[in-house]
Image (cartoon, rainbow, N blue to C red; front, side, top):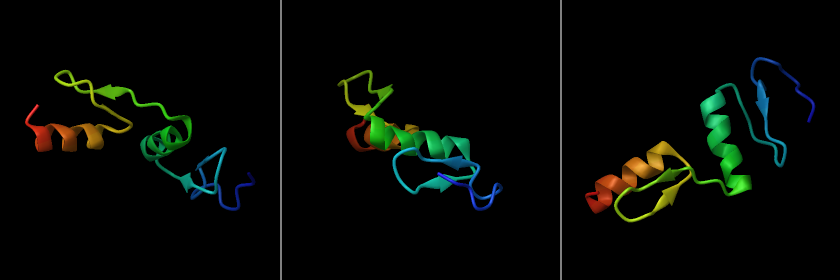
Length: 63
């Protein structure tokens, strides 16, 4: 994908029109396409694609 503005389009998704200047946000987005869920709950095996998702799970379930 062409980058119209190198500052705003520093990271460009290979599968859709998503773009970001922040590498962390970009990595989390790419996981939506790859299905990778590297964050796993030690208590129940629940998996999340983002640290925020795991944090929410732990607060919700008390793990």
